[in-house]
Length: 113
Length: 114
Image (cartoon, rainbow over all chains, first blue to last red):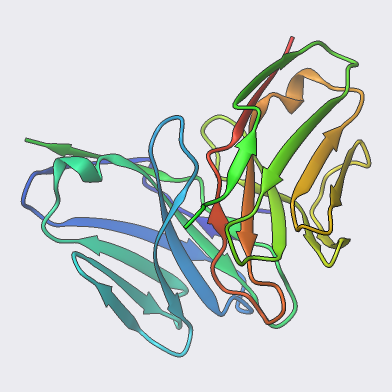
């Protein structure tokens, strides 16, 4: 029962351009969403999060957008840099009655020079 | 600021053996969660420990057990290892006294079962 889905397994983008990563979820109880970045042989690193009471959150080059009615969120990286090449995971949690994070399968981003 | 640490980094076991993985949470955190990440998949929740008790458990068999110590560090034990237990095991820490939001992950332990 995959409640969080990242339907694009990979994304290739030119350095300096925008990277857009998408994530869909099915559980309407999810009220907090996170993006993690993972390099090979390392654990996931927290990037940015958004509460369900907001529709946008920015942190430097990273912006997360949440569309609750569509059960969809996206991560924008502008401008993309070579160091952004990694696997990006979308995660969600229903804080009212849950403690666990539910993850998508990840999107591998490759930033071309 | 000490982050989440895990040991060992890599481990090779054979089917039927038992394994213990260890985790020290980020400084100031009191809650530890364990996740299993199979190749090509996202992390799957195993269980969470808070105040030395298992607070929530994911869909994993009883072969998977854990413990949290008074200093908040934690162990994950897996008995009767199967080939399918080969994965990256991730520990995440957070503040559990309130409805915690962000979990911070360690580098993981790569377990290979032969």
